[in-house]
Amino acid sequence: MKIEVLEKNETNLRIIVKEADVPLMNALRRIALAEVPSMAIDEVVMIENSSILQDEMIAHRLGLVPLKTDLDEYSLPEDCDCKSEFGCPQCRVTLTLNAESEEGTRTVYSGELVSENPAIVPVAEKVPVIKLAKGQKLKLEAYARLGKGKAHAKWQPVCVCAYKYYPKIDVPKEKCQDCQKCADICSKKVLAMKGEKVDVRDLLACNLCMDCVEACPKKSDGIKVEWEKNAFIMNLESNGGLPPERVLQEATKILDKQLKDFEEQVKVEIQ
Ligand SMILES: [Zn+2]
Image (cartoon, rainbow, N blue to C red; front, side, top):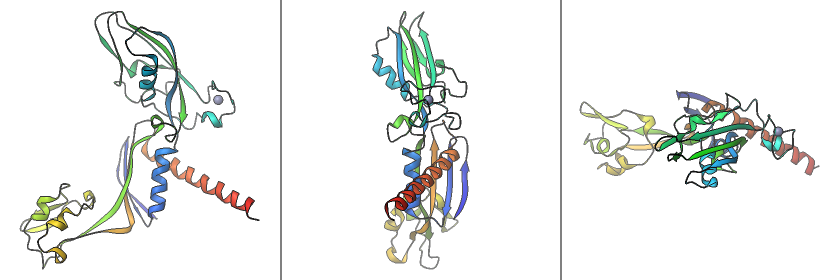
C-alpha cells in the first residue's frame, strides 16, 4: 500500500491511498466517525440560571462545543479504573462558567468556560452559548468526558471523513473535436481549454459525475472518464479537537484491536 499526502494542516488531511480496497477504506471511515473517542461536555450542574433558556437547552448547547482532546492523559469512563459514575481526574474534566450581564444584552461565548486543565479547552473561543439580558446570570459546572460518535454526534472527532475513487480521464486526441462542451459543463473545472485543445487541468477535483461524458457529442468515441479500482482520495476534516492524522492513526489502532479480538474469539470458539 502507498500513501501520498496531498494536503495537511491543523484540521485537514487529504491523502491518496493506492493498492487498497473499498472494505478497508470504508472500515477506516466508519471507525473515524463512530469509534475514535473525543472530549465533549456530558453533564452540567446548574448553580444559577436566570436566563430565558431552560437548563436542558443550555446543557445541550454546551455539549456541542468542540473541545481539545488528549487521548494519552484521559481514558474512556467505561475503561477507567475508578469505575465510578461521577468519574475521576483520569476520565473527567471540570469546566466552570460564571457569566452575568451587568449592562445591556450580551452574548456569552465558549471562551468564557474556565477549565481545570488548560489543555482541555474549547477549540474556538467564539462559539455563542447564550444571550443574557441585563441582570440575568448563568452559573454552572460542566463535566467533559471522552466518548464515541456512535453514542452521540458531539463525540465525533471529524466533521468530514470521506473517500472517492481516483479518477482517470482520457481525451482522445484524434477523435475529439475540441468543441469545449465538456469543459463548459464541468462544475469542478477539471477540464479547461489549453489553446485550441481540451486539457485535463485538475484531475483530482473530478468527482466522477459524468456530466462531461454526457455533454460530449462524440458519445462513445469521445471523452472517457473511469476510475482506478484500487486507488482512493481520502479527505479527513477534524473539528479541531485532535489533529486529523491522529484520528486516522487511532482508527487504524481500533481496527487492529477489533480484528485481534475477533481472532481470539475464533480461537476460543472453534477448537
Ligand atoms: Zn475515572
